Image (cartoon, rainbow, N blue to C red; front, side):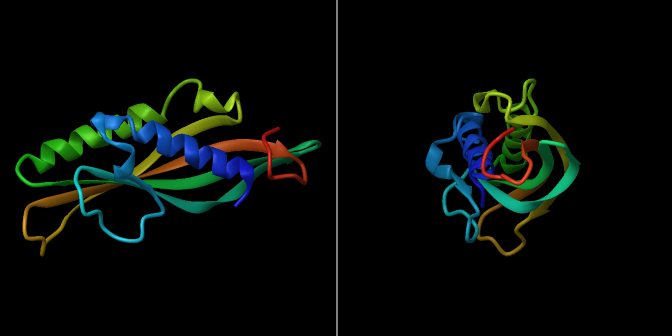
Length: 145
């Protein structure tokens, strides 16, 4: 993973830690399984693709999915609040301004909702896709253009 992508993912995790009064330990980058404390968020890096190349720079689109989890009474309402908080935290103008223009665009994609059928208590989750565009110098994907 390049330094530019690492910075983007770190900024996303930091922003999500502020959603719905969550503590930073409830937001995990590339979680290895379901959370054990609720509410919780997970960030999944699905790689990138080149969307534009021109003299001096290459524009990439990084694919990220954010999972949200809630449990117990009021889980459906809690998951709705998490979803709204995630979108509000990530789809901003300017996008991820703490990266000083390194990200040009963040677009929300599809959202899926699921219920944990075999959980001992009511548990519900969502997964929302995001497409994040950023540019690097041509031939150097380690830093922003």
